[in-house]
Image 1 (cartoon, helix red, strand yellow):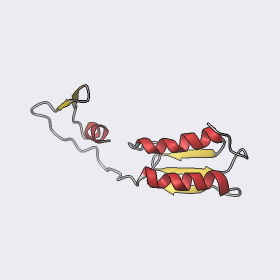
Image 2 (cartoon, one colour):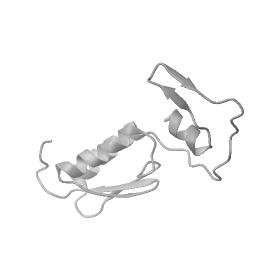
Image 3 (tube, one colour):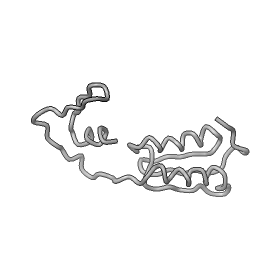
Image 4 (cartoon, one colour):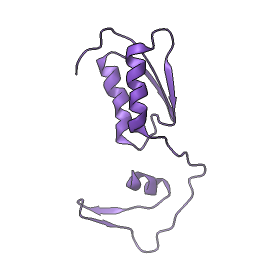
Length: 106
């Protein structure tokens, strides 16, 4: 998450494996403009699960995480889709509803 956010601000971090990270001398932050502060994708996963099993008539919309999230846990939505849930995403939101039932194991 940190490396991706630094890249958004124009900082090119050189990585030597996972043991050393180097920011070249003279690096300067460049504002990308407006920055969205994400919600917690791990906490959002409970609502993804809820939508996958209980949202029959209308989807559950989760705002604060989406397709542009830097957090790996947002991929829980992909797992729900692979199990049969209907998942739509936007840059900072997810919508989940029950699709195939019962959900299949993955």
